[in-house]
Image (cartoon, rainbow, N blue to C red; front, top):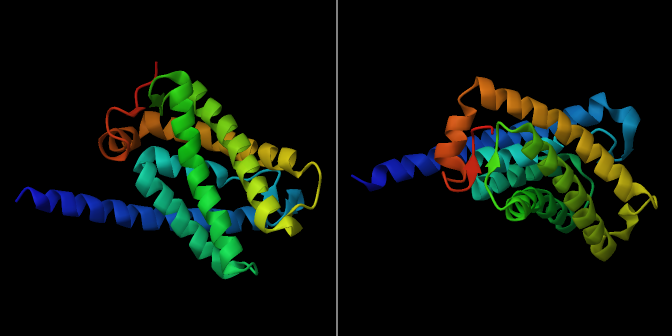
Length: 201
């Protein structure tokens, strides 16, 4: 009887990961449609609203399931890309892994848990993630797809786009943490009580 709740728990997280992946996919497509005028190319926009969804997935669902959610969203987006599967999957892996890396790195730097209700934590995370995401993508493109390197300043453009989207998302997540049950869910089911703090200081 002790194993049944664990099975349901995993099923619930899988279902939430699929929903979160679909949300990420939809937001990416909507971002490209609404903000076409500020796109550098199909990988870089000066305002990339889905950027913070990658972080929110990991903050709320945990390192594993949050990364799976972003990966699922990226795989869904492959239906709209003309890139080879190898390059597309590599981009998905960097996008999904970058968010988890940023959260782990910031907690190491701060030597404490992150707080979903603390705006300064979310803004620091947004900035660190934007830098790591841009650098990791450009290292990847340099190695396997140099055709993506279209502008000498595109690392800067990508950082700006991720920061803009992530800052907007940080304010939204902070509001949700203060006014909904998402912080309780994150504390109980995402990282576990030892890794993320849902109470602002």
